Image (cartoon, rainbow, N blue to C red):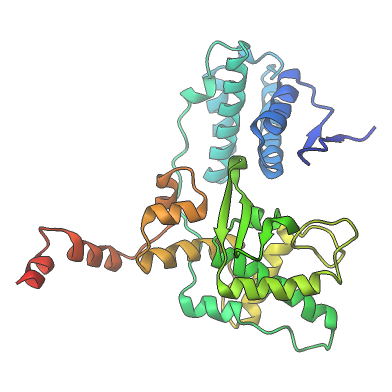
Length: 328
């Protein structure tokens, strides 16, 4: 029997061989009830299995969660710290534990959410690199490699540019872009139907250059897409494009553009938000475009120069000296 069971309606993947019944029930709930993405389910499953292995050394088990205390979770995080685990990864593992214990609490399997009693590790403040406008245009205006006269290379380059245009032009997450199906593109209205985090659906507007790039790719796509494949972006073998390949695509575009550095797909989304704010877009509008549930998330994502903020203050605040001078 295969190790995995795939739910036909959600497309998510579950392990059948989880030894802990509460863990299996929780993973099933993530997929069927909460509607988490496949990436989130895989990450949470790996985190909880790692915690389960740690508990075995302490003669504890996720099958008996009532015996797990705050000290056990703190010791687990301390062990991760000694292994030089990134603090962002530690925070995600703690988030997985909090979600798991909250699930158990609602079902009466524990008396409290033990993981909520543990503080988050202090995070380093890191932001993806932001491209300036010239660097962004150079990346989006790249030509296909001239080393070989290969039609397939030229056609796939149309895909690469269309993907980059969506990441920057509409601020999509890479998971959102790769999760798009053909029916999600509405050429008559120039919008995309995007399924974001937490299964929150939104409509993302398309720039004129995004529309042009998508049109070029759709003509080329028919040469690659496998029969019955509905994904908007496919790889050379005709199936849905994967995250690792997408990262390599953006890195290759950076090289072809002559940039002395490479960026991740998320950097294009971050550049999208930052350029909008610098140009004067209000934070609430950027929040909607990014698909953030909370405004504080948008504030953390975006870096607006101090010069721009001071300028906005000088122009708008009634007690600003510049405003007083302009009114005279």
